[in-house]
Length: 141
Image 1 (spheres, one colour):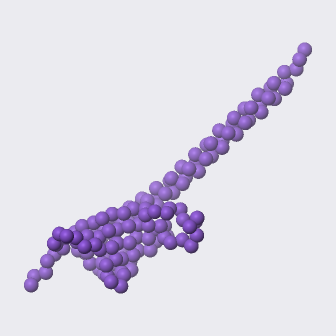
Image 2 (cartoon, helix red, strand yellow; image 1 turned 90 degrees about the vertical axis):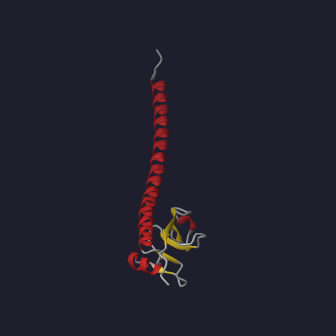
Image 3 (cartoon, helix red, strand yellow; image 1 turned 180 degrees about the vertical axis):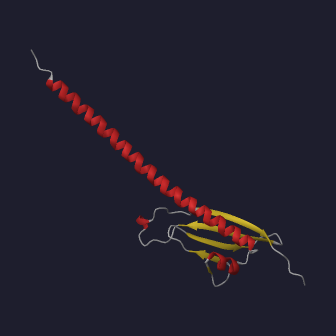
């Protein structure tokens, strides 16, 4: 009578191998999902910050000095852009010229902050961008 123990052991080894491969795939999927969740969280924060800055700039009729005071931002020397530094991204707003008289324009962008090590940067491109327009009030002369 032959013993069936070696067959049972081989079957056990094969099952352990299959479970190990399955566990490795699941772990990789969880890490991938965590990375997507992190990037989505940063993007959601960027959208909220850009929307807040856009509404503030529109409410100030494009006056970046007044908007910077409200948003706790820094205005450039030429007064054409403002910057709001953050931990996960840096928000910038740049005024742009339009061909339409009485219409103001600005381009807002939330980009990752500058890193000394490029490999440490979680995202390499702008997180969120938005172009806004507002009606400029003509001064009475």
